[in-house]
Image 1 (cartoon, one colour):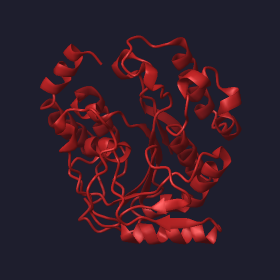
Image 2: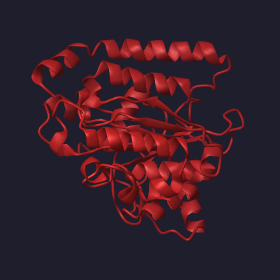
Image 3: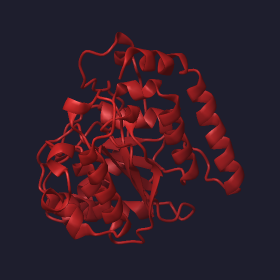
Length: 305
């Protein structure tokens, strides 16, 4: 990102709150019987008023996304158009730990897992309520599926988790639980999502946060490379067909994959999300797409159901 573009985004920061508020108001006027706002107390059982919650995968952006009024507005509008969840189960590309590990269930400091940014980005706060009942439910589902599960009660939300949440639920009043990625085995990640799928009927938003293209060598280079565009188009087509075999076998089937994903931890949350969507109606849509800073990182984000 060049300095002029960064300064334009910073100057526009006051617009973000107005964009988010407008998006919420428009969505509420369309929905007539919106579910009551959260009081900070989670529930994973009384969800008849919600129906089946969507599963989502979002391109989460670097911390400077917080200064991008367009992208922040898109995320806010997306959240406003969805049923308000009782809690969020976050699977971020920035926490890989074996076995699948449950993070903090009480508010703890955020994890500022980035370097060399201006000081203000290390002052961001997101004091969302913890989700102990959801943690217990996740442990029960994994245990019943004979999957090992760990706990790290001091592990806060990393920037892959809290940055999109700041835009989508800026009042930090939806309980959030983060679950680690238990390694990079595509089939195991898909299976993890399938095991978590019952949470959709309990008001839980299963939220994968990553990037479909993530090559840091091209992070601040203008222009969309052909390999990035090819991979993005392949992902779009595979997701619309809900071709789980292709999504799992992306390393041999996808064009441009070695450049788009030199390492693929940012793709991993998509597999968890797709697995969680598999048992129900797929109805794949892309609420956000395009290219970050007109470069190699696709903003393509996915809603299942």
